[in-house]
Image (cartoon, rainbow, N blue to C red; front, side, top):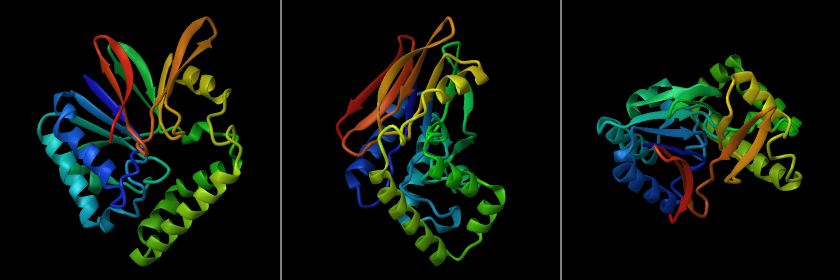
Length: 239
């Protein structure tokens, strides 16, 4: 069994989400071969050198799960793109590139966070290119902690305000970008998060039947995609 989750936005202000995630690490995920976390695991991350006691407790929970035998794979989201090698080493997880092509039950599958599919949001795409530039990342990681905290608060505040003002289709994936990316990577199954719109979408790639599976966020309930011998099942559960 393989589990995939995304968009937990873990933070001290949401102890219900934290409890649900910790229950997953000590329960269902212990029976999994692998756990994939496809971005926005934390609400904010300003650097591996700035781990709070709360974030350290999450790191320790991941390490305990890893030590139990479950392989953990982590992908950057738009909220926690500064997660680095030091955190992953401490947590016992592997950092994945976005996108990453994997194989589940003999089928090639593409994993993404999902924000790079929202190409109609031109302002966000420009900001994303800037923030993910290696030089920008180097500078951000070496700013004083107080400056990083202020910058993170500013970016979160602006992101919320801008998202409320944008049309729903602008902040969702671009319909033409999905098949383009899937064809580029030679897959008929794409799994991503980011949009907070959990669903399984059927589509056609030429003559091939394909699907796009969107993982849900954990704001009101938890979501997990389970991959096993029966296929792929997307389910919600109470926090």
